[in-house]
Length: 425
Image (tube, rainbow, N blue to C red):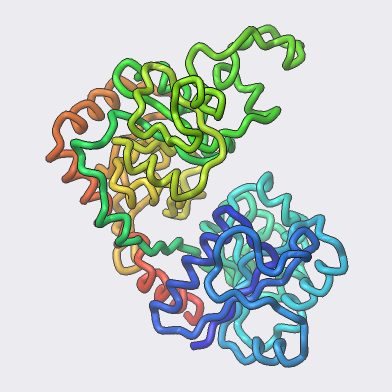
């Protein structure tokens, strides 16, 4: 089967990662797959996309020959729209291409979003446009009850929207180069590591609050936290803050945070460390180390060195997950580190085998440790983390169990086969 993937943006976040992983999955399942990139104004001057390395990406040139070639495909996946504010000279031809000119293959529009806040970047108004939605045979997303698909159901009507809905499961190709080089348990730091940007759905505040409770038991660090207005205003992250309302940010600041240590070039120099030192073996003490932007490989090294990886991603409705994890959650397991996840999330993501749900959640299968949102089980979590860290054979047993279950859950071939099966059902 010939499958074409089309995107109007290549960036450094999860949608492009999904496109890359799906590309591999389709190929692993025996299909002929191509990816086409339709540039927009922000990247028009670049010879190639500037973020993630997309394998074999082809720049779409809007020629009749290239259009005819794509129309020979069996399936076309629209993986990524252009940003809503893209210049019309890029956006309008792109929209004509995906809604009108590609008209022979089965066309699937992918929505990698749960809520309207994140999707405003691409244009929520498109989900209220009946002609736009009806230009696709199917619409793939996590669950038909998300805020975004609820808009589609309002636009098309429940019956028509459900005819178009197709379940989107996230495939992932585990890298043996990481798994074969797991850090031995005895060499791991007694440390909790968070990697990623400061984003609401990731619930990074939970890392802060858990640190205040557990900092005498474990070291803590956050990597990828860039100083900006939003993060500067978070109490105890960079600064100690006054609690009075109505004050400006400058008026609220009392001084440096008592709970964190900001690791930058100046700090490294003052402590006699090279400017590129990752502080993997440097004692953190009871303050949480805050690192800024990082190279992906450096972040993975830090995660591999930690004994626990924190990822408190949480959604407001258990159905919204669609039994999908975040890629950041998978990478913790891939690095041989035990996951520290949100309890609600873990209880609402059910694991799959051969593309079908087992009906058992991550919590049921004891895939790591799970902290409740209100931290009411914090001491229980600390006790379990201490037990696992102090019993290397139990730690090792759990991390291999996590890997085995997650590998089956995200199996590329099973995921691709189930998607194709559902598409032609």
